[in-house]
Image (cartoon, rainbow, N blue to C red):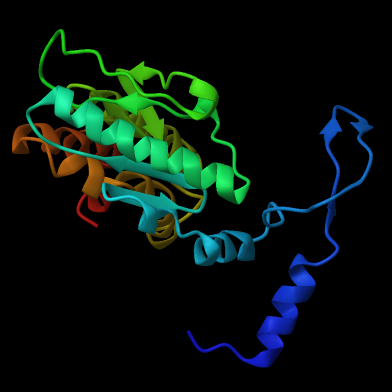
Length: 234
C-alpha cells in the first residue's frame, strides 16, 4: 500500500490527543484521554483497526474478521474433536486479546454448532477469566440470523418482513394521478429493497437445498408484484 507523507501526518493527527466522554441521559462523564483503540463513529477507524489487527495470523482455524467482529470455525463429524480444536483456538484468541489490551464481550459472544441432530453433544469453551462461552441454537451475526439446523428460516422471515415494510413505504409514493413514476420507484426498490434481499446471500443460500433457497425469492417476488408487475423482474 503506497501512502504519501501527508496521509501519515493526517493519521497521526487523527489518533493523537483524542478524548472521550460517556453520556447517560442528559448527564456527561468527565473527559478522559483515549489511550487505546480508534475513535468511534469515523469511517477511517475500521480501516485502521483492520491494518493493525493481526489476530487471524495467530490461529490455525478458518476465520473471518470484519472490524472488531471476529469468528472462527472448524468442520467435521467428530464433535469431541471439533470441541478440542475450537477450545485450543479460543485459548489463543484470549491470549492475543490479553496481550493487546482487548476484552472479549461475553454478552455478545457465543458458541454455535451446526448439526441435524435433535440432541447433539454438548460442547464447552471458556473465555477470559474462565467464563463459559454460551452455546446457542440461534445467533445473529452482522445482521444474519443463523440456526443450528442450518435452515435459515428465521432469517428468511425477517428479511421478508423488512422488505414488505419498505415496499409498503414505496407504495405510499404511488398514485393514479399523482406521485412517483415507474423509474423513481425502481430506483427506490433497487437501493432499499433489493440490497436487503441480496445482503449475506452467500452465507445463507449456499448450504440450502434449491427448494428452500427459492422461498425468499418467491416471497420477495410476491411482495414486489403487489407494487408493480414490471418491478418483479428488475
